Image (cartoon, rainbow, N blue to C red; front, side):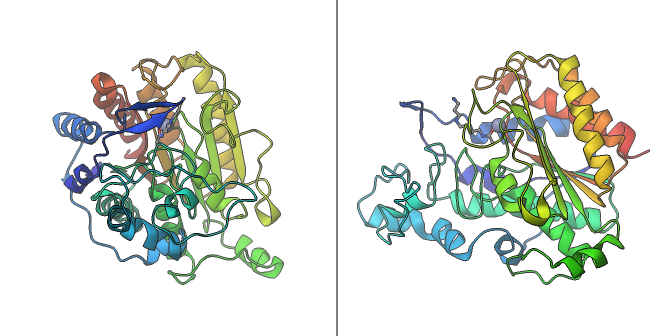
Length: 369
Ligand code: Q9C
Ligand code: ZN
């Protein structure tokens, strides 16, 4: 299995986040990627390659132009306007009816941020762009015939919406890769925001059965950003298995009755789970997710792979053990789909490497036969 990695992730190293009212060091640290990189090298899974450089068109197909410009320039503008150089973190959030745009660099972060877990430092944009390049390189390799590729993305992406950062995420690596795969197997131009197809276009699309991509999100947290991006779409199935948002972040999305809208109704599947869930019960839930993906018959699978489902994770409450991950990998690979694995969360430093290697071995065992 080829893995893709960029050392530029280390440029994103914020000092703190605000968690439940307390200022704490950020769990999502450069050390995570260093540990994972060392573990996959030690496991000799296959070559670890640097990313190719992509322009911003595949990003602009998923994120709004003004949001991308914001991410690129806000750190310097914030500091110049008197914001704390430690990190860009808003003090006032645009919510519901108070959501006018405000160009003031001290206010703008409140418009483009939905929580206080996505601080921006000088290197955040470069690191986030590198993570996108990592994911897109993986997608390009699948298009060139690879069956399974691991994209060691950092910062993660699945909480990032069209124009919102949050939950350690800035650019939605998995969504950008999925949209890139889709546009490469259909004839849609890159660099334009996708509009839902007309009924006639949909009938025509049904004749081309693999013009679809599925995203399976197994991070402990609901992939609210990915859900938002594809919510009206019938050519992307989004399935997320996660902690019930009634008790866990991101709280305001991720419930079972969110099934997609318009033409995309039925193409969003949320599987919220109870605290303390064990390997056996989790694997049952996974089987449900995989059945839905099988029915959708996509041409590619993008796996948002978070390891914060592990029992020892400092911010999760599931009870999975290290032995679960190879089994999860084997079941996913049994779908028989070309698969891009995109790194999301996972914060149990001591076991992170072993758990991701287990998942990757499980997928490789079945997937590359
Ligand atoms: N009480 C990812 O795993 N804060 N992001 C959680 C819990 C933010 C997690 C608060 C967690 C973000 C990619
Ligand atoms: Zn997570």
